[in-house]
Amino acid sequence: MTISLRLSAEESALIKNYAELKKVSVSELIRQTVMEKIEDEIDLVAYNSAMAEYRQNPVTFSLDDVEKELGLNGL
Picture (cartoon, one colour):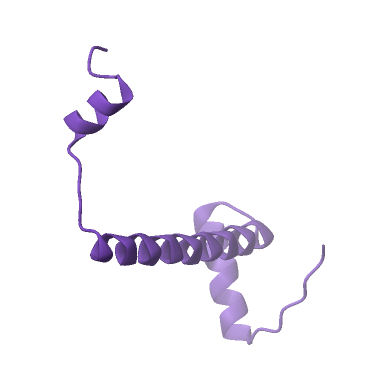
């Protein structure tokens, strides 16, 4: 897929310089940045959901409890 993007001269120079600093192409830099942004938002939704669930039922388990439950305590 090809995507075009309008940037000012200053924005373009900043992005090109940053890509050079990171030793990646501008395309790769933009791809990585967009994917990281999407993943961060997905993680935030999962976190908010987990926190809402925890607030409704604030039960926690220790690592030892989880290992015992899964039968991993003898490993």
